Amino acid sequence: MDRPAPSHRPAPSSYRSAAVRLVRLPGLTTLWRAALAALLLCGIGLLPWLSRTDPALTVLKARSAEREPTAEALNVVRDQLGLDAGPVSLLGQWLGGLARGDAGESWISGAAVLPSVVQALGISLLLMAGAMAVALVTAAAVCARPLWLGSRRRFRPPRAGGAAAMLAALPEFLTASVLATVVGVQLGWLPALGWYGPRWMVLPALSLGLPAGALLGRLLADALPGAFGEPWALAAAARGLTGRRIARQALRRCFPGLLPNLGLFVVGLTGGSVAVEQIFDIPGLGRLTLQATTAQDLPVLQAGTLALVLLAALAGGLARGVAQLMLGPALRDGALQSSHRPAPPAHRAQPLVYGLPLLGVVVSGLVRDPLGLDTAARLRPPSWAHPFGTDALGRDVLARVGHGALTTLALALAVTAVALLAGVLLGLVPKVSGAAVDTVNAVPPVLAGLLVAGIAGSGPYTPALAVAAVAWAPLAAHASALLEQERATTHLVATRALGAGPLYVLRYELLPAVIPPVARHALLRLPGVALALAALGFLGLGAQPPSPEWGLLLSENLPYAERAPWAVLAPAAVLALLGALAVSAAGGVRGRRPVSRERARLPQPPTARERPEPGAREPAKAGSAAGSPHSMARDSR
Image 1 (cartoon, one colour):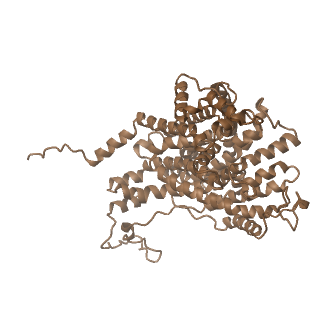
Image 2 (tube, rainbow, N blue to C red):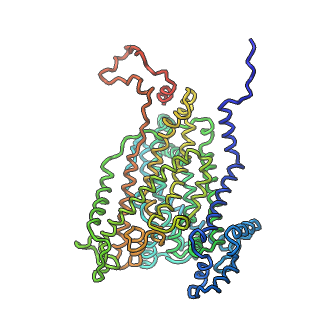
Image 3 (cartoon, rainbow, N blue to C red):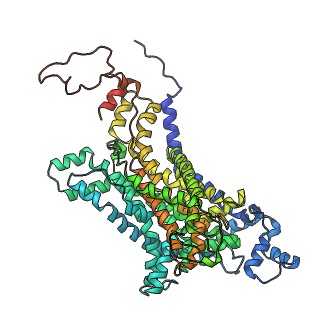
């Protein structure tokens, strides 16, 4: 029998394989990353012109605030900097010098840019190392109880973890201010200002590492139940392996999914610790970037941002490589087990424990006047008339906290929802979003706020746009890591082998496994989003007085923390309640796989009354869909 002539047209799967190989080419990934970095640098180079300000005037004020901005003085500055050539020419000159190892000279001081950026980067990396050590110790403390219970096969779904949530919800700048005031100034145990040795690193590292470690610990504790419930853990316990060895392997199983976020923390702690470096007077890269941003010193700003972009690419690539090594050939052979299963519902009363006090504070504050001035009642302690005391202008702190909640919470919820949607969608295409995640994470929030303000103009919603532009990156990294592991599970390989199409796999297998943990992650980051909005307000990039926005409240009352600590502790306590509420609500987000049409037509398992006697044969039912490929794949799990 003659065989049919082979067709020269490749199968659709060949097209997909060729496309996958094309996307995985290292050269294209490198070009995509370089294009994003170039786009970011171009946006920074256009910052003075985007903000519709005269860069010569800004530079003149930064050089000498007392000098009159006359036309002659501005022309001298333009001639020195070559501003008349335009931003494109300046950016081209800077890139040309960078190729020769010359990052230019500062527009303000006239000194070489590269040595100052390298020195600031070294200080920030040292501070980041200390903060990461504190974060890992804090994460270990948060995960100690789940690991102990899991090693003894008594694992239960983790509780809300209110203490860890409140710790993660504390603003970094507030923690830094309290530590500097109490430990550094009043008690004198550790130095509070400067950067002269290891002792000067303790308080800043604690301020940065405690919230980051609490968040990492919660993410790890969220992933441990699935690891302890996998078949390998059950088999290891049946064979008599010690609980300590099982706990170590459970950590190894969960850690690769957190490595991308750990890489993001490295970059965020290096360039995003602007407020902490400002409070402790640390000459790091974050503070240098802030000073260059406010003074529009473009050579310093571009060099600092480029250093953060390179650090982000290195940290992201290293994290992905370590994750590949830890998982080994399981990714290649599709031998993983899905660690995200429908879990028992969390305690429904826990969100009420934190939500009711928060609601009570907001409602009690809404019935009061947040703008009423009473200079005779300045800095009054809490009383029946003013339960949270008064601020430096005699305004009721409870009223300002309640009215500020409407803006802060609404913006935080909206930004979190947008970040979750963008993170899941971009996490589905990791080859495209991987470089974007690293590049976006390298942008300090202050710089993002200024870029957004330059494009959209300043206003009360500018911080929300700036935070939304960068808040999706951790969620996309988490979704990509989970998606990579879920695609290598045995049940998914069986589902595809039985004929399931890509849309079916995406809808019924991948998304139900990825969305619940990423949604819990987004809820855990809700206080962080509120903190980012508050930090921008604290630095003067958000709402302006007399608005009762929480970041502005902390900024206004922080100078009076010693005389009137209640004016600072009240907004901080509300933020802590918000963190505990977010964590308790995240514990109730549990995935339930949808019942498809094939599964709905299957005969339901018999109840105790209908179950046949042992040895009896159950008659076959007509019309059963037990032979459906998709149903067999799901039932095999």
